[in-house]
Image (cartoon, rainbow, N blue to C red):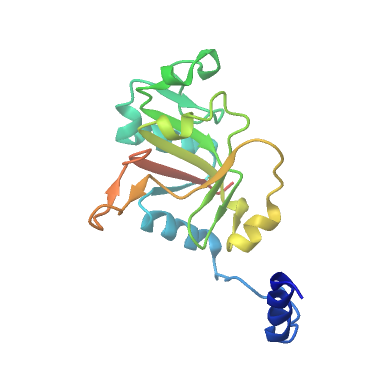
Length: 196
């Protein structure tokens, strides 16, 4: 018997009994009010969370924020919310987006468990928009808030292309365990949680 066969035979003899997969039913968490939980978690991860009744109110709330008022260069990918000072689709090279002060994105859903927001970047003229902007605002409908990541993954139907879960502004605590916000991306994140 070759050494390989001896080793495989020993592994087989030492293997425990077969165990049936337990399944995933019943996993996850449930909240009394997932929208309230999402808003609390969004604040906990460093975002500003503004609950608004509709898109017109979201626009007003965004325009009232200092980051919006001070933005010289901004892009909004949400019709009716915020303003664009230029057409990002007309920008040929993503490096030309340098200096983008504010970008406004739509989110397909939000997760109460951890304030993650699902952002599909395929419709964006440049994927770099969500990382190059100094400040970001995300518009998400309260009706899309799910309890946990299990529910989120059940709802996501994504083909080719890039999408991500965004959980507030950029954060890292790798260096001396000191939290630094904005080290690798946006320095702030405003969540416009639309009720209607």
